[in-house]
Image 1 (cartoon, helix red, strand yellow):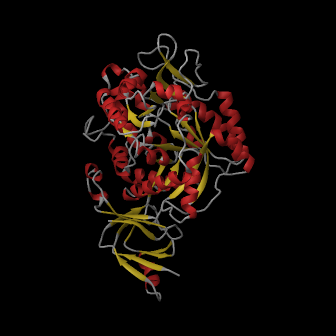
Image 2 (cartoon, rainbow, N blue to C red):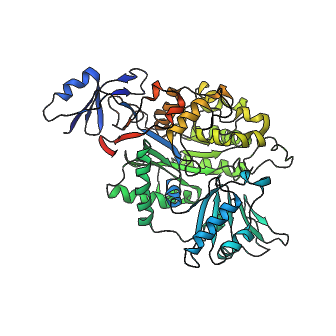
Length: 525
């Protein structure tokens, strides 16, 4: 039996009953005692002591919404974040020069909202710099894509008669042929044409990416990528190379297989557990495809896009919940959040034990805010979105932006918040996330000391709870994870500073010195 005493620490437990401690006793992978009660364990034969040197310790953080396979893949793709159109095309030209003809070139992160007039590029622009390579570039929002003519041909989309898919749209040239722009479900037509990497290759990418997670203090994730990532996580787990805890959601294209296999939410162990079914109910703010109760500002005919019609969403939700699957439903616009609330309230009685969640909850009408708590629905939100999207929200939602990213309002109604990053759409930097949640200011301090709609700011304790206990609650693991308390798994991180004694601006520079998962140091510098 392995016994470890971690002593002389400034330990924030996250437990309101005992919020601070100076030492922890661990037996194997669990915490068994705090403070004075830990002394007896430290005196046991064979016990090992470690002096923490007064360092600040907090529970390991969970990123409750991440696309890790996409992030890992993106480490080799072009990073187009904050690129001008010319800079984007220059990157594509440079990559084409070093890539064998016919091989795919991929990239992510472009945002037409930053370009002159908000105008999109098209296939013609990409053809001029990469005529011999199929090129596919995903927008920052992940709800729009841009490809060249070679990619359109590879996907069989070049003809003027090519129809729009259900819940998706192809950009068009004057003759009706696709112009390289793809919105919502149309993106899948190009993605399906890209050769899928083998599972072993995906696993290697995830193994590399998890070290980046640990270095930022993330000891667990809720992953919402597709099936190949699940297989790759299982391979890492079997090889004992999985060092962060994973709650894995699968998507609609696998619902029939999940039900046929009897795969139910909660299947797995403390390292890799099945979360349920991830659905998309609308688009996003950037391309103005989130479904709205009233039109977008300046666009009287644009109410956004529902990617699942109400009857279809209800039917899918009923099938899934009856089969034991918890639901995680993407909802951006206020119309979509209302629809998703209607559906989740309807299906909850089919299995009251399941923890359903709404992903993003970006704009929710005030009269709907209390409904999450009443129905025991988790608000899975991403603080960094608010500070990076505030200008877009004001431009496209106008006065409605007051009710966007409504963390404090939802918390005050009793809803459980679970925070994440949505990486690689944003970066998985939980300390920037804490800064965003507490200040509602961008990194440059805008829009001023009070922040953007300051009534929605959280305390540091509340924001940390959303990254720890709240995420554990969303997974149905709140009695095992999210606190540093007896009986809980020993997942914790050692910081280089006391974030509780410093202004929020200094939290962003926090370095994680060590990360422990399951009683073992998995990362150290």
